[in-house]
Image (cartoon, rainbow, N blue to C red; front, side, top):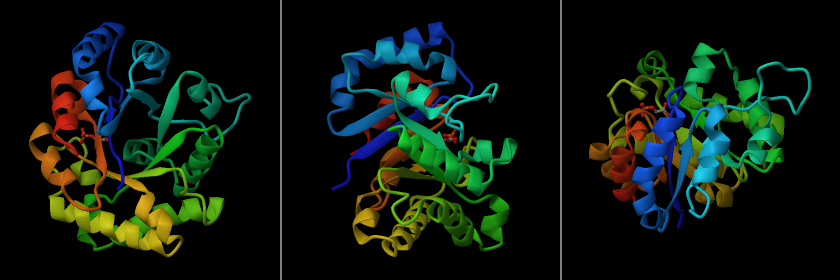
Length: 251
Ligand code: PGA
């Protein structure tokens, strides 16, 4: 039985005041929230340590939105995996579609980031997904397969051990247009079958989130699908009440 995980990706939003209010709203629920599932909040870099200090004495976790593919050195503006671990992160997103499309991150770079994150003891959440154009062309599976293959090529057959996946159709991110539970399930099932070729045990164990316009009103239905183990929530994670509701309707 895979444990559910709900992740809230704040993207480039938040202030210290916002965080104080958010955490105040989460606190009364923090025990029940993390009883049956893992909950991770993913703020921008400058707020990681602060959020981590506010989450002390809770089972709530923090994660980062990005990580350098380099270990350390003269890379102005970059943040290393070791620094993220040191700041209290357990998780890090790699290959979010906004990084892939707006910052030209290639499958190969994403693969490098995943391996560096793992080596620092972080759990990478590898984001994969197709654009609307790719879906219309009928190359959803090929696109996702290539995104996964790049990681296996660089890291070998065990590269995806101790990682998580997030299927995020690009056309569903921030658009209000969620994939139907069946559409999401089909892709999750495809990925699990694809991983079975590497390791049956890995394909059964790996936690796979769905992301793309998840809200309180659609979370339960999505999470009820057999191969969907949680959610990567963007916009709706910015309202503590909505995020709590999404967590509570899950698992
Ligand atoms: P959204 O974002 O929930 O606002 O669609 C999801 C994501 O980008 O991870």
